[in-house]
Image (tube, rainbow, N blue to C red; front, side):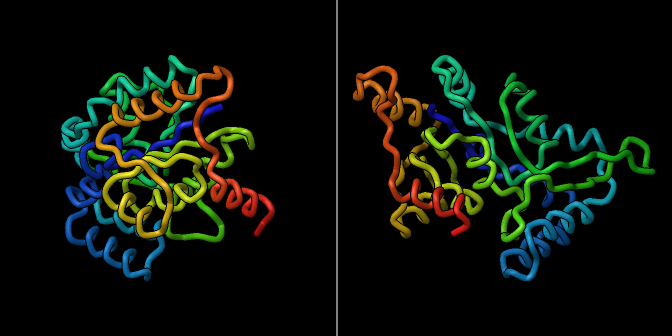
Length: 246
């Protein structure tokens, strides 16, 4: 089976919603937490906790207005339908927060799309009409603290050994899962990283590029049951070594 996994911020959305959210409501304190994370003195979980604390009491109306203003790649809705028509399971893997992912997907009629992300509870604050951000992290990795939601682990946990894994991304948190995917679609930071580290990938600008490329590869196969997508040997070896604890 072909399983497709995609990043959210900057891939489905136009720009990084999480970065913009914490900068909007957390200001300079939030930016200092991000700088500490990039320097390596703060873990991803620690960074998120600091950013959430920096936001304090957030007006619900302002929050809703901010999220409603976020745009998505116009081709993503069509891509969701394309995957469903062909029986390709599609899952969003995000190192962002589920509260804004759910809001944005719902606003664009995509509430049924599966996603895995960090959890953000909007707890009523003492200030009327305001909430406080309380994060939790159900998908961390015990050995790595550079991402709060381990996309690699989720991708491998939710796939069978015989599945062909497709990964779509653009940023830092997409580097790790890209090493383990059979087929990678990359842009921006991820594209540069893949090229620097000899990870085979296809450049894309929209989800329409991705469906066109996969469709062409499947048509070229012509055998029906077995998809014409490659199983990348280095990715298969990396998955095997991980399963074996190597």
